[in-house]
Length: 236
Image: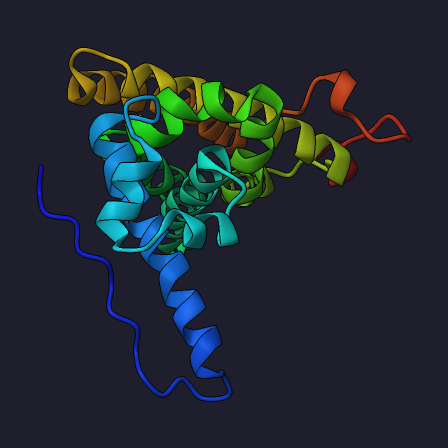
């Protein structure tokens, strides 16, 4: 295992007392070390003694910031998820074509779920440690906005008059599919091959939606507005 070295606090933080700066650096060191250990060994095999030793602090300092190992894991989980969400968001930024935006977001997501750190902390240990409801809540908080952006861009490419509730419904269905796909990649014996299969399958579905848009196909009646027409029909 590589040597655990906590980040050194930056002196002279503007507007913060020395004590507050030290407290913040201690918390950051604990999260840094815990993240590395959770990724390498997993939650169950990581002890608080190993964490405080790696962070070079006392257990009292740990309990000052966290109620226990689970609370510390939750902070690590949140940071890993937020960093992943930022990477995916970066891949979407500036991409105007909705289909390219969707594929770039998908590829970025598949890159993330193949990383050992994400696989171990988020996919493998996350549901068991946090519980299913808390896990989903954290996942939605960090990544759902990216899914909404992708779905909105692809559906807006058509001439369909979908209200926000229907768009959110599409987004939640796609979010569930992406979560399941991510888990299948992360737990596969060959994650790279699994990622290629997922990209091919979802790419095929996106191509189907793109074909509907290009042909001007109307939405099924279940998706129509209150007046029984969609935007394509209104334009005729």
